[in-house]
Length: 185
Image (tube, rainbow, N blue to C red):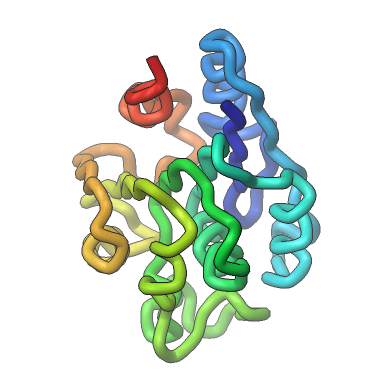
């Protein structure tokens, strides 16, 4: 089993809860890949999609996307041919992908957001199971975005109270690890 973490904007795999996840995933016998995505302070979708391609997601892959990384994971799935299918996608504090829901109105877009948002039908053709984690006190991505994604993906929706944006204060997410391990025994 391969776990691929796509980090969010303004960060890299050495920050937040990412090192904890790497350690736990490896401890549980899984392969772990967390590419350092280009230009994290002002990301370009096409550049991030190339990095996801390099991880070679396949049947035994769980893709985890945090914040902008979750948007990239869903955009990557939208663009895949019919034969590509991953085992599971877990979104952590991921935006709806709609321009009107962009967290900071005047920030650059570079392909992450569109007027219509995601093509959930296409996305669902490429994955067996979706899980959405979102905190009701997220100051960057509204809780309604988590609800929107969960509904559109027919996903299991894990709601939290005090994780905010699962950012610098969050050092571990036990529920995330449980979702990775569940069904693997």
